[in-house]
Structure formats: structure tokens, C-alpha cells
Image 1 (cartoon, rainbow, N blue to C red):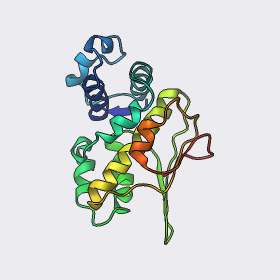
Image 2 (cartoon, rainbow, N blue to C red):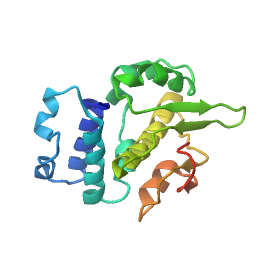
Image 3 (tube, helix red, strand yellow):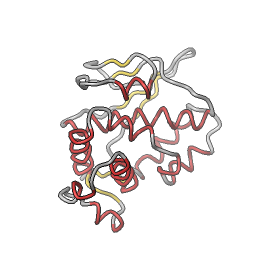
Image 4 (cartoon, rainbow, N blue to C red):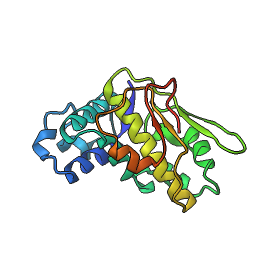
Length: 188
């Protein structure tokens, strides 16, 4: 069974509540919010279902907005490992080693070039919630890169394998670059 850390699940729930969602809307989830404090992880499918529910209730871009709220401390040991990185590219080396503490559903690959590198996320979406989780991941990646570098760095382009949402406002604000959909790969 694939899993997602309760830290990530809690962050998504907390952000939905901050955006005005009534707590009662989250009681019918397979992992209800009243159970969160008792858990270390949730089945990945529960996490993807949560993303689908919140996208429907809070509109396009919720996944992007929650990614923008991620802090290094939200990642636990992985965030601590990132804080000790000397350069931005090193976060992906650390991710390979420690990301399993958060989930076993992520596979990153960095294609390094002298002038520009591509960060690929290999998570083929078998449902909409996984597509939304991929969006949140890339949004959070921008935040992590900015935190490590101490600079307002943005990608040159963002590519998603899935269809574009109805509104790109949150995407444009988070990425500040061309955002491509229906592409062969997910990458920054």
C-alpha cells in the first residue's frame, strides 16, 4: 500500500480550513480530520481523494495555493536535511535519500545542464487527485528552492501531463513562467 505522511495530509486539511472550508465537510473522508492526531501516515489514495474533494469545493488552484504554504519544517527530517544543503541542486540528492519518510509515491529525476536543469516528477496519474498532488508538489518545490537559495527564483517553464484547469490565476502567481499542459512529462 502506498502512503503519504500525515504531515502532508494535515497541511492540506489545515490550508483548506484557512481558506474557509467548514470542518464538517472533512468528516466523511476515509481518513477524517479527527483521526489525524493518531496517525503517522495515510493511504496515498486517501490523500488523492482529499485533493479531489478540495479542488471541487475550493476551486481550481487549491493544490497550487497549498503548495505555496509549505515550509521546510513541514517536511520533518527531510526539511531538516534540506536546511543543511549548500546549493539548491543538493535538495534533490537529499530527496532521493529521505523522501520515503514522507511518501513512497514520488520519483524525482534531475536532468542537469550547464545553463538550465529540468526537474522531472515521475508520478503517472491514475486519478485527478494525483494530478492535483503533482501540482502541489511543483508549487512547493518552488517554495523550497526559494527557501534554500534565499532568492526569489522561479522556473523557466512548468510542464504537466494533464489538462489545464478552468483558471490559471493561482498557477501564474506561483510559477511566474509559461505553464504547459497536456505535455509528455511533468517537469520544472
